[in-house]
Length: 463
Image 1: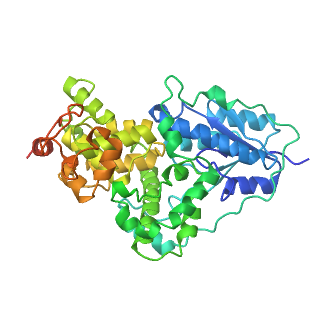
Image 2: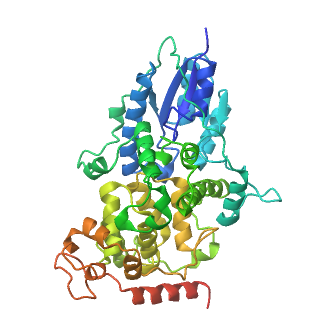
């Protein structure tokens, strides 16, 4: 009798272009397993929005497997221990898995490899992290040369086809009931906006890609216009591995024009973020540039005014309409337009002078596409603290950004108190003297915030 083959699933919740699943299916009966391990991840256990997505993604995957005569086995606890026990239950079954690079998964992979026959495959990125190096063989730290080197190595690998059949073991191991994991919010159920905004699962990911193919040519311009919603909205599907970047690349590779070229670089940025955390595993909790340890951040844990400002930012009550629209879209849908992500992040760090790590944690809890590498790299880029980052002294002006990128419609959608204002006034009702009584005044003006941020920056540098 063939030995069962365990497939350890994490952020690769798909059947097609799944190298671990494909290899297991060729070797014997397949036992797909997902282990919910909240302890190993520490403060980066899945946040509320990600847990909502995970529930529905696992539900969709289980249904896809059932249609093929298979099942999804659910376990909870230490991943290495759970998989080792399961391997023993199944007579020493090998474990197949796609490599993951978050520090807790690298540790778990190392621990599991000491207990079972662990077979790892590359499959979540355009090119395997570590495959692109400088002439001296060192990993790249800066995005632009990294991106050029990636393009020189293209095309990426071919898409791995879905297994034609999935053989089942003679008997299935015990499985948790997904409902018992309590991944969905109930008291209160705040996920109505997420349900309205998203369809989850592998089929939904491919539906979204098919829709996006008709719009990618406009991406270079439309990605900066919140009111046009010119983003692909594939990010949560990519994060949970319902679709792979290789599948996206091959679907779009024949496109011409700047739109596809720009979007391709966004996919490469995702690879770059993984390479960053391979070099700097604590990137989500430690600034790369040590000098920022001396920055006089306002600490919400000790300063009541800073705590109020942080809460106003989280709730979308800062009095800066473009910032508030973004933060409310985030809470309502679990997602935020990419241009507005930069504006809201810059506002927290530079206008409110609050450490970027408070923002990283809030986004981690509220984004359905919260990714350890990308979230950290993007926050450190905005803060000026990263290995490759924007300069701290470049401070976005919310009003200028809002007007430049025609965000009036976006503001009206997510800040309904301002929906009746004229096109110009909606960007800055305080300035036009028409702020509604139910909308807050600005918690800080741009000029005042800029001067405070620059003063703190120069003091940090001893200037």
